[in-house]
Structure formats: C-alpha cells, structure tokens
Amino acid sequence: MNNIKAKKKYGQNFLKDDNILLKIIEAMPNNNNHIVEIGPGLGDLTQKMLKYKDMTAYEIDSDLLTILKSKFASEIQSKKLELIHTDVLDIWKQNNTLYDGKYDLIANLPYYIATNIILRAIEDPNCDNIIVMIQKEVAVKFAASEGEKEFSSLGVIVKLTSKEARILFDVPPTSFEPAPKVMSSILYIKKDSTQVLENQFKSFLKAAFTQPRKKLSKNLSTNIDKESLSEIYKELNIDENIRPHELSPSLYRQMYNKVILNDKRTEQPE
Ligand code: SAM
Image (cartoon, rainbow, N blue to C red; front, side):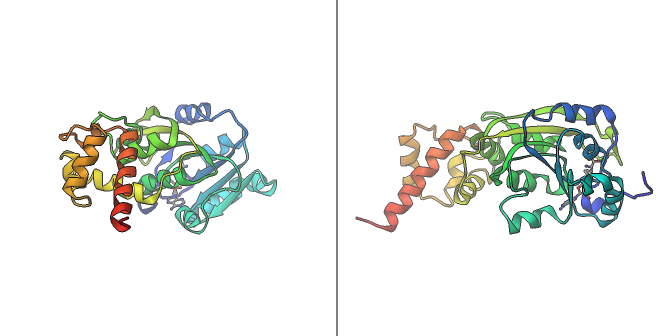
C-alpha cells in the first residue's frame, strides 16, 4: 500500500475490493455533471471515475497528496482532475459550494464527519446527486421513512429535500484496508434542488427528536407552551401520544409553520 500507514484521525479505510469499486462506477448517474470526490485517499476510486468524467477532489492528508500528485500528474496537467489540499469543511465555511457548476458527490467518506458532510451537500445548491459510502447505521437513518424506528431528523430533512433516497448496497469490513469495525453501505440521494430548509426549521427538528422514544409533545414542550402546542395538534389532527418517528415529514413542516405563525402573533399583537 505504498508504505502508507492509514491515519485513524482522518478516518482512513481504503477500499480495496474491485467488485465494490465497479458497483460504485455502475451507480454513477448518467448525466453531464462534474464529479466531486471528498477524500480520494490512494486514488483507486478516483482512477476509475476519471475514465468517465472530469473531477475535483479534496484531500486533507499531505502524505496522500504527494502520492496522488504523482499518480495523476497527467490528469492534473490536462485539467481533467483538480486536486485540492484542504479540509473540505473549510471550503463549505468559505463558500456555499464545492464546485461552480452542477456536480455529483461520489465518495467513500471519512466516517467521523460523514453526517456533517452529507448535511452540507444537501444544502449545497450545485450538488445534484449524492452517492457515498458511510457507516451502515448512519445510512439507514438517512434513508429511513416515517414509522420506522430509525426515522430521525436526518430522515425528515432528506425526505423534504430529495426526490429519492435509498441504500444501494452494503459493503463488509473485509473490502477495506484496514478493515473498519462496522458494516458500511452506499447511500444514494437524488436531490430536489427546489427545496431549501431554513436553519430554524432544522433546530425545530432537533428539538423534536431530543428524546426519540418519548412523546413528541414532551420534546417540544421545552420550546413551545402547552396550550399553543395542543391547539396545533388539534388543528393538524395529530394524535397527542405520537412519538417523534411516527410523524410524517409534511406534518413536521406544517407544524413548524404554525409554531412560527404563533410566535409572530405573540411578538406583534394587533
Ligand atoms: N477514497 C479512498 C478510498 O475509497 O479508498 C479513501 C477513503 S477514506 C475512508 C477517507 C478519506 O478522506 C481519506 O483519504 C482521508 O484522508 C480523507 N479525509 C478525512 N478527513 C477529511 C477532510 N476533512 N477533508 C478532506 N478529506 C478528508
């Protein structure tokens, strides 16, 4: 492995299974979008994707960068590949996008920041499709539907901002070097770019799922007074015993709109 020792702090588990690499390539959307990869690592997936598309890749580890620069010298020179040495989250802090044009994010993500990366990609207006390898348990949460016990604020966000979200396939630890302790999955999200969620709505969702097994009304009662809450429940015909994972994304939306309206009424009485 180029005598490179995988660095735990960067979540380095290199994908070494040709069948899985091929399955990811087969899952690439058939469109003219650019490709962005986060964490090209030793470049195995990068090399395969470069056969089909131009790419931008963000890598934090300078040791890997040296290897990648020599491996892809001609692609970098011909501008097929733009290789950027940085913490990808810093780019999103400075800009609202990872690429100036429509792109698909295809990557074997560093698991320690995978949730954060996916949430940022959902907000990135230029990102069309997300195809990422992450810990299976997290992928299940992103792809979950109402009623399923794994349904959380992540599931609500995905349902409201995507046309489709599902797990494409699972990947066992033995496909990586070094092998991670957990099972992995490839998550696919086809975004609906017309839908943008306000930060305040996301905070509302966070509050709704603070204690996922308790009643939703209990979680919300810390921020909303009892009377307003019970009025909203009545207006929306919601069962008072409902648990957070049982309410539909659209009802979360409607509930939030009513909470905001109530707040405005209290702020400026007529
Ligand atoms: N793509 C390679 C593969 O499939 O074998 C490597 C995947 S490995 C799970 C995650 C990669 O993300 C590593 O190369 C790691 O150095 C890189 N990485 C970790 N944190 C990062 C960050 N904040 N920004 C950019 N790259 C990061």
